[in-house]
Image: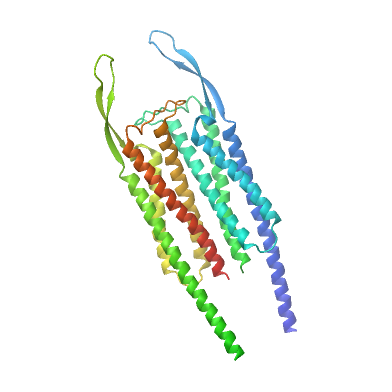
Amino acid sequence: MQVGGVDGLERNGKEAKMGNGRTAKRCELLLRLLALALTLVAAILVGVDKQSAIVPIELVASLPPLNVPVSAKWHYLSAFVYLMVTNIIACSYAALSMLLTFTSTGENIILGSMILVLDTLMVALLFSGTGAATAIGLIGYHGNSHLRWGKVCYVFGKFCGQVAASIVVSVIGAVAFILLVVFSALRLHEKSK
Amino acid sequence: MQVGGVDGLERNGKEAKMGNGRTAKRCELLLRLLALALTLVAAILVGVDKQSAIVPIELVASLPPLNVPVSAKWHYLSAFVYLMVTNIIACSYAALSMLLTFTSTGENIILGSMILVLDTLMVALLFSGTGAATAIGLIGYHGNSHLRWGKVCYVFGKFCGQVAASIVVSVIGAVAFILLVVFSALRLHEKSK
């Protein structure tokens, strides 16, 4: 009877563990879907970003200013290209890792470790991209008198706003990857129990 | 006799596990020491970076150029300040985590998880700092004709070289933290066995 009781407890424990495993997998898939959506939005936001404007330039003080058409495009600055590329890589990886997490069955420690390493690399990649774009964006917004780099965001307000939105969305995507690193570590820990 | 044999095997297994644990702890401490040293060097490299130069400026074509003294200091650009701050934070954390790893005894899963989260945050912090400094450094080196941001590194070669060295050292420090994330995850996995 006692042995049966212990067996029952063990079975219940195993069922509870399987239930927890399914919930954890669902949570992880949701987080990966979130990371995929956020990095996709961030890449699109910066990839379609362009603005044209007319800037009055005064050549001679006695004459009226000359209206010069100017335009800002995302590929004019390598930091914004890098921001887009990092988000595309992270988005593609999120899709691939979703597929791997979805199809993997059982306790695959090697796959778990590989995903943990790649998740960490995505954190590094996304934060380097947002860091680069933010640094350039700040100079565009405030200028730098020491280097005589003039501010440009007062002319291209919509363009700068869209880059800022892309940076914010990309940072939230990177935070999702940080949560996935912690999650992957805890799942590795669970699997080995 | 058989029971004694099994006991002996178990004891050997436990001793081997303890030996592995000590080696793993030593490796982790070495990696943390490396991360500490690298981020310290990166912070110092950018923190002591300054250069003065004489730039000939031609005011009137018929007169000889005017020699103007100019100087470059690390705190003129917020990206370089950020690079230094991120390295100081990572260096301080490396010291603190070394102390925690060194003094912790036994299987502390909560401390292990906390260190894993903080290691991941250091990866994010260091990569955002190096990303920001690299973006500004590239504009300083090549300039940007679209924004009329002139290149400056041809005047301040030593200054730019020192920032580049700091970025490289900081990236290696960040890679040490990536290895620590993987290491922390594997140690969590080992502890829970």
